[in-house]
Picture (cartoon, rainbow, N blue to C red):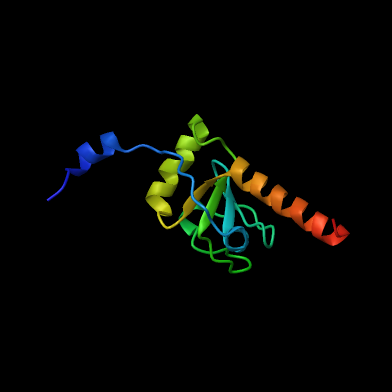
Length: 117
C-alpha cells in the first residue's frame, strides 16, 4: 500500500547527502543550472530548457548531474528543485560549492604532480 501522495508531499524535503562520487564521471555529465535555464560546460551552450535536461541540444552530452548556481536552501534554489522534480528526476543534484571545491582540489593535485613535488 503506502502513504497517500498528498500526505507524502508534506513530509518530503530536500536534504543534503554526502556521497563519494567519481569527479571525472561528474565532469563528463554535468549541467549547471540557474533559476531559468541550464548551461553545458562542455560546449558552453546556454539557454537549455528545464524540460530538455536529458542531453545537451548542441553537443549531445548526456546529463546525469546538475549543479545549482543558487544556494539550495534559498528561494531560487527551492524553485529550481521544484522544476527538477517535475522535469528531470533522473539528475543527481550537487551543491555547486562542493563541486567547485572538489574541482579545485583536483587541479591543485595535478599541479603538484606536474612540478614533481
